[in-house]
Image (cartoon, rainbow, N blue to C red; front, side, top):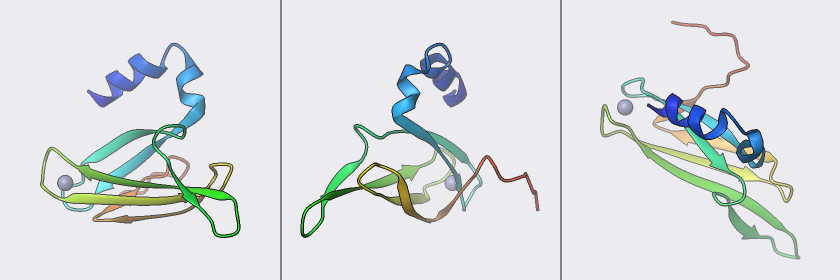
Length: 103
Ligand SMILES: [Zn+2]
């Protein structure tokens, strides 16, 4: 269902996707995979730094359909909205670039 939706939203015109990225996350409890589109313009929160300047952060909570495991994603971005760090609880990030290595 998510794939269909993503294709519908971003398949034809890439204009929507240039301002964001997909976050691929796997539930550590049941293995359910989530593909979330993060809009850098609307999903990131501003964090004003002492002495001027601004960084961004994202706090995302994901609850799957298979289990009640609450996955918490926290990401930090610099002033240009580039990812500086990320951490996750109760789940794991899936990086598409990594070769698939199963068990
Ligand atoms: Zn789960």
